[in-house]
Length: 391
Length: 248
Image 1 (cartoon, rainbow over the protein chains, first blue to last red):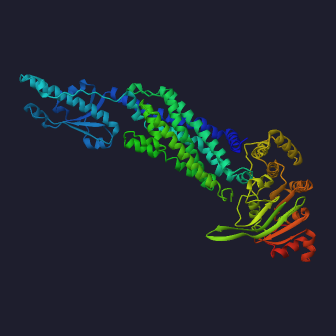
Image 2 (cartoon, rainbow over the protein chains, first blue to last red):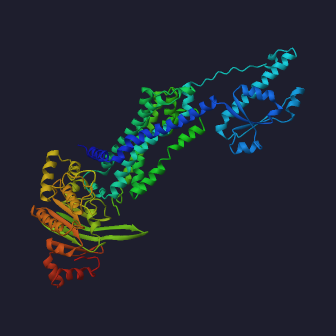
Image 3 (cartoon, each protein chain N blue to C red):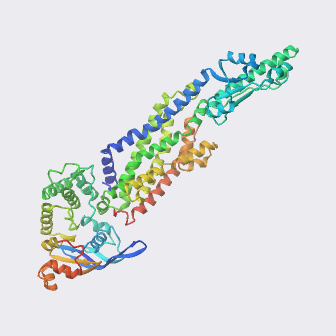
C-alpha cells in the first residue's frame, strides 16, 4: 500500500473516533451556515411584510391646520397620533420612524392656491424607517396629485396637461436576480464550511502531532516526508470536502423552507447548482486545507495554531465584502482568482444566471494550481529539520 | 553495525551558534550493547537524531551496516528501530493499532504485522493493554507500546534515547532484560542514558560524552582500570570533570 494512503487512512480513522471533530464536520460546519442564513432571511422578510401590512403610526404636528389631508391619510390606514414637542429629537432617538409637521401657514397657502408646504422629519441612516418614510411620501404625493387634478378640472382643464410624460416601469430583474443580490454572502458560508471541516485535522496532524510528541517517531519511518504530508493533506481535504458537500446539500434543502416567494424571490438550487457548486468548491477545499496545514505547521503549539487559523478564517470574507460593496459585472478573469471565482460563480448560479463551463473550468484549474503551490511550500516547511522537535 | 565519524552539529540559539556535537566518533557493534553516557545537554540526543536522519550534521559521516546516512536515508531508516526521546502515541488508537500503523508505513503485509505484533506483545508482557486505546496509559505502558512499534520491522540496529526515563523500578528491570534479549538476538543495540548504574549493568561498551566530545570509549572494566578508580561512579566523575547532571 502507498505510504501516503497509510497515513491518510490512519488520520481518517483517528479523526472519526474524535467526537468533537465529527460534530464539527458533520453538524456544526454544514448546518451553521444555512441555519444562520435561514434565521436572518426569515427576520428580514417577516419584518418587511409586517411593515407593509400594518397601519402606519404617524405622529403629526399641527394636524388642526390641515383636517382634509389628515382625513385622507386616515383613509389609507394611517394611525394619526399627536405630534411630539420636538420632532427632530423624537426621530433622532428613534421614538418615531417619521414625523409629519404641518405649519400654520398651510391653510392660508392652500386657500390661495399656492404650494402649501408640509415637512416630513426622518433619519435617512435608519434603514428600518425607510419603508415608513416611503409609504408616507407616496401617500402625500398621491394626495397632492389628486388635489391638483381637481383644481384643473374646476378651471375646465384636463388633468392630463399636468402629465406630459408618463413613466411605465419595466423591471428587468428576474425573481432569481433579486434573491441573488440578497444571497451574495452565501458563498462565504460554503467557504466557511470548508474551513471548519478541515480545521481540526489541519491542527491535529501538524501542531497537535508535534505537541503530543508523536511526530519524531513518525518521521523516523522510511517514508519521504512529502508522502506523509500528502497523506495528512488528503485526510484534511476529505473532511473539508465532506463538510462543503453537506453544507451545499443542507442549503439546498433549507432553501425550500425559506419564505423567499413571499417577497417575489426564487432560488435556483437544483442539481445543476449542486454539482457546479461542488465542482468549484472542491479545489478550494484543497487550497484551504493546504493553507491551514501550512499555517499550523508554522505554529509552535496547538493553541498557537488555533489562534492563527481563527485569524485566517477572516481572509475569505474579503472578496465577499468587496463584491457586495462594489457589485461589479462578472468578468472572466475573476474566475481565475481563488475565492473570488467561487464567490462569483456561486452567486451567479444562485441567481439562475448562466455560467459558461469554461469559467467553471478556469476557476477549478486556477484554484487547484494555487493549492499545488501551497502544497509545495508546506512540503518545504516539512523538510525543515526543526519541524519535528517539540521542545 | 553503526559507525559515527567526526560528527559536528551546531544550533542557533539567541543569535549565537552553540556547538552541540563537536567531533564525535564511535562504533556500535552487532551483538553488543553500546551505552552513550553523559550528563544532560552533553549532545547525546543530537548525536542520535543525526543517526536516525532527523537532523543533518554539518560535518562528519555516519554509516549504518555500511550505508551512508546522507546518501540513502530511507534505506538507513529501514534498518533502524528507533525509540526517540519523544515517544508520543496516538491516543485514539489502540496499542495494537499504533504498532500496526508503523508496520504499514514500513510496507509490511497484514500477516507479518499480526505475527510480529503478537510476538512483541508477548515479549513485552503487554497482552492486557494491547487492545485498549492508549489514552490514559501509564508511562511504562507507553514506552512498551513505543518499543513494540519501533521494532515491528525487525530491524538489525536498535537505537533508544533514554529508554528508562520515567519508568518505575519494575519497568526499568523489564527494560534491561529486553535490551539483553535484543543483544542475544545478535542486534546492534545503542542507547543513551545519564544513569551510571544502568550503563554499567548492561553495556559491553561505554561511550562517555561531555560538552559534545567523546571523552572515553571503552569496556566498563577498562574504564575502571584506566581511571584508577575502583567504582564506576568515581571513574565517570573523573572523566567528565564534574558530577553535574549525572544520576546514580
